[in-house]
Length: 53
Image 1 (spheres, rainbow, N blue to C red):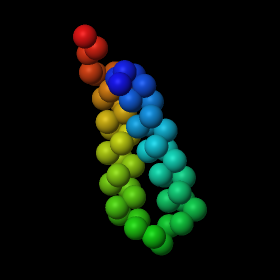
Image 2: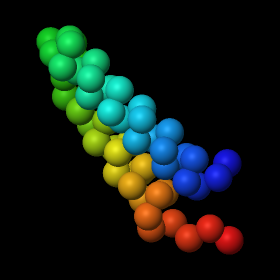
Image 3: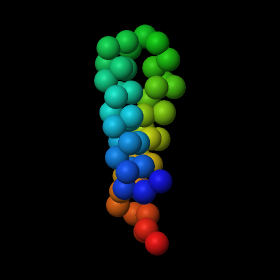
């Protein structure tokens, strides 16, 4: 898959997870934060730092 597309998908999923967290804070709070932050970091990496060959 294209790295820029992968980065965009990871960012969107991470943002959606954060939106879900704001709606349902009591459920799996720490797990949701860890997954969301990981996806956002991975998205930024794929968009800006990974070189396409």
